[in-house]
Image (cartoon, rainbow, N blue to C red):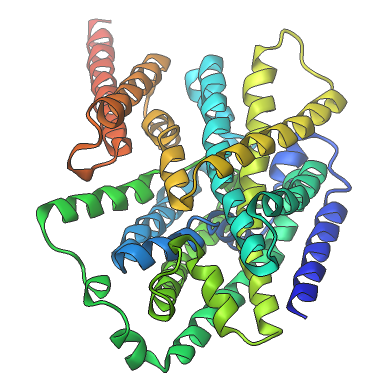
Length: 463
C-alpha cells in the first residue's frame, strides 16, 4: 500500500507540473510565472524550495552525530529569511521587469557584472541541486530497495521533465502540493517516533547528555558561530529565493510571504533535527545519512508511512526543481544573451533554456554521486556565492551609490579570502572560509565605497 501511495503521488505531481506548464511561451513566464501570486503562494513555494534534503535529512544526520547544536546553527537561516522579509523584500518593486539576480546586478553595475553573476548562479544552483538529488537516491534506496544511483535517475527524471516543460509555473503549482504534504508528514514522523520510544521522558533518557547540551570550550563555540553564520549568509539571495521575490503581485505580498516562511522554518528545523535524535535512540549504530528514512520506515503504520514518504519526496523535489529552474534561467538570460551580438528569438530562447535545464541536472547528478554528506554539499556550494555576490547585491538593493569597480574588487577579495583560508590554511579554528571570504569582500567593497564618496564630495565642493 505504501508503495502504491508513493507511486500515485509521483504521478499526480508529474501531471500537475505538466498541466501547469502548458501556457509557458517565453522566458519571463518560465522564470517568474506572471508575477501574479499572493502571500500564501509565496510562503508555500519559498518554504518548499529551501526546505530541501539538506535542511531535513541533512539536519537529521548532523543532529544524530553532534546533537541539537545543529538545530541552533540552522536557525541562522531562519533569521536570514526574516531579515530579507523586513529589509530586502520592500525594495522588490524597483525591479518590476527583472527575472534573475543578474538583472538586478546589471542595473547597478553593468552588463559584465550580469555575466559574472550568471556564472556563479549556475555553479551554486548546480551544487545545491546536487544535495537534493543525493537525498532522492537515499529515499528510493531505503523505502523501495532501489540502488541509490537508479533512485537518483528515477526521481530526477520526474523533476527534470515537468520543470523543463513548464518552468516556474510548474514549479510553483507542484511546490504548493509538496509544501502541504511535508508540513503534515514530517511532524507526524516525530510524534510517532517519540511514541515508539515510549514517550518524551523515555526519549530524553535514551539520548546521550552531550547531544542535548550546548557544548562548551572556545574551539567548539567558534565552530558553532562559524556554522551559524554560514547558514545565515550562505544561501542569502541565491537565485531561486530572489525569483520568489519577483513572483508576488506587489511588495506587500512579497514581504508577508517571506516573513511567514522564515517563522515557519524555526519549528520545522527543530522537528527534522529531533527526528535525528529519535533515530539515535532507536539504532545508535545506524548510518547517520539514513536517520530520517530509518525512523519513517520503523515507526509509522502502513498507509501513513506512504503519505510521509511522499512528504519526504516532496521536500527534495520541491527544492530540486527550484534550483534547477534558476540555474537554467541564469545560464541563458545572464550569460548567453548578454554575450550574443543579436538577441535570440523567443522560440530559440525557450529551446535553449530547456536544453540547459537538462544539462544542469546531469551535472548535479555527478555532484550527488561524488559527495556523500548532503549538508556538506550545501556548505561547499555556498563558497561560490556569498563571498562573491552577496555584499554588492545587498548594497545595490538597499540603494547605496555603488560602482562596477567596487563589485570587481570585492569579488576578487572574496575569492582570495576563501582560497587562502580553505585551501592554503586548511580552515584554522574550525571556521569555514565562506565567513572569511564575505568579510574580505565587505572590507574591500565598503572601503572603496567610502573612498569614492569622499572623492565625489570633494569634486562637488570644487565645482
